[in-house]
Length: 359
Image 1: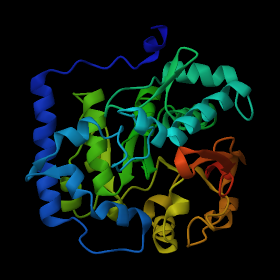
Image 2: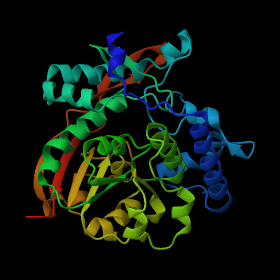
Image 3: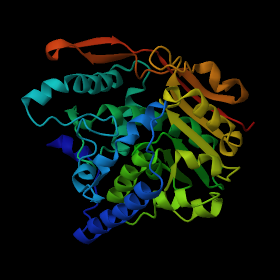
């Protein structure tokens, strides 16, 4: 029972608050699917994955409450998270995910590239939460998933290497590109009130982020995805109107913000088409960032066709604060025939880099 003390102490929201969350989501989803949803195929991996998302998010012309309440626990999902087996057969079917999560946790214990004590302190500070009914494992009185473990690694590095560089008198905008349902943004909220999390992703992902943040913090002011899509230029005034912002990837080019910028991206830059990756780099926000924090493959080939490598990030233009080969993703577990699994080297080792444009 002690392990469950490490769970995030979620606010018990009232039925009225829960109803309001789904009312806002339903309104947002209707606007989106009527006016903005992608209907054509695309060469981009993540856009392909979103085209069929309507069936998950929207059912009988209304928000699919069952999906949102369980969005972190099933295989038919938008987010890669540790699944939650419903029976013995699924337990075998999801075995590789469970082995991967346990492997990552044991790496923290082994201190191979980790500071064991700091990581334990991080896990105590940024507790696992149950929004979206996630699958999880329990070891050494900690509750965790693979996704949670790696984001604890990211926030630990952020706290140790970026926070000391920040000017306490400034308010910063953290653009978490490919931020999914907002786990890193959630950690940022717990870390520093002078950093505003802005989750940038495809709209279908951002709807889960709205649900995730609102369930954790019912009083948080968050923009609707459709409001952002319907706007022209996205100004500082727009962002400052909210505690957390959700910005569809297609609107990133419309952001008119040019200072106090932190950009983070974990793993997804290497999965984008070369054109989309270049569009991010050429944007006003990227050209005026103060800090870049990225964790990505040294080389996306052969897993991804566009062959983006570490040389495409132009890291030499930044003052290096932290860099190294990441201890995350050295090996992965893959499913073989008859529910067997095999531990194999990751397609490419990943690098972690924090750089600044400030002297």
